[in-house]
Image 1 (cartoon, helix red, strand yellow):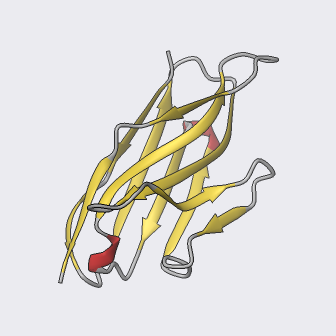
Image 2 (spheres, helix red, strand yellow):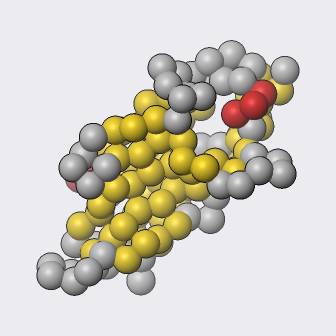
Image 3 (cartoon, rainbow, N blue to C red):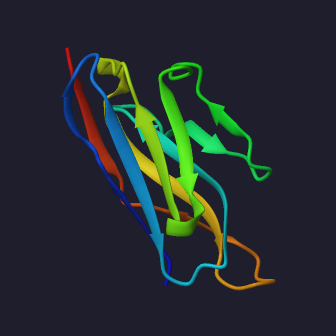
Length: 121
């Protein structure tokens, strides 16, 4: 049973910072292309930052230079440092990854339950 658990969300003033964490637990052999997605009020879920399968990071234009995604493979945890937060960054942030439970098994897609980030003006 694989679980992704996000933490670190909260209420912050514009210009502030938050660090989100996504801890992956369960039967894990490999974690591919982890990423953070955001769903703002009335909006569809969109990619904010992520790793490609080759390990390259990519960012949405709106967060480039302000957000940084990084991972600790030893802890099976993916982080996203968010700085200079803006009210438009408000939303529920979800962690997603393709996870292979055993060697040779085709990885499956998993999502966390989401963590709320609210940026006040």
